[in-house]
Length: 105
Image 1: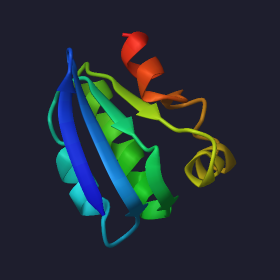
Image 2: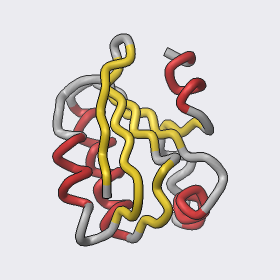
Image 3: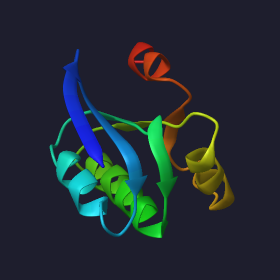
Image 4: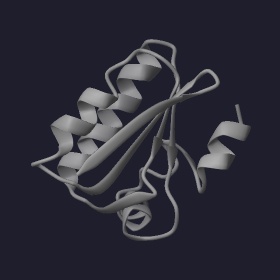
């Protein structure tokens, strides 16, 4: 798992690549620990299990409580399917591309 971060305007962009599972979820969570508006770009994620889902939902809830946003980039593919199957699509702020996430302010 590789995780890159960068500032994009007012947003912190977190981009993991690889699998988010029990072995890597803590690393993703540590990159999502800042209290600021964050974009989690899951474009490079090839697999995500329930531990990864818990990490994403936990970050969403924590940032929302701190009056910050978590916008999640989920292109079509395996991660989008797991988000849809679990019914989280409507509960999370999701977009299809990083450009859309940044542009929608």
